[in-house]
Image (cartoon, rainbow, N blue to C red; front, side, top):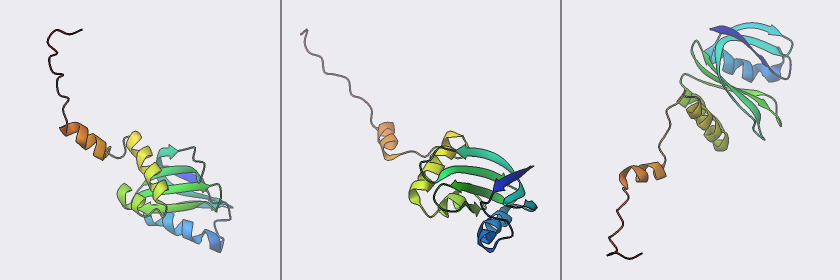
Length: 137
């Protein structure tokens, strides 16, 4: 894995950045701090953008799990970690964001595509042949 860097939006030593730092530490060792920059071990596997809100989301595979890092356009940048992608997505507070993240990870091949109800129906519904018209037309 490579060293990655995220911008916290406030100094890494700041009390308000502690929650983000704790999330990253759940899944990766912190390898450096420099002002509002934090470095950690992991691999960037997906970048999901543009969002009108929150902004940009980056997904990292880390030594002990997965990290979602959000560069938020409205509130301070934030992070969400989990031991699996499903756990990480399940911890997101906004269901609309979870849906967009899931779709992005499905498109990138990191999550299998889920079948929707429409796909299930299509799989069991077969088109019927048109009845013979008896030579009309």
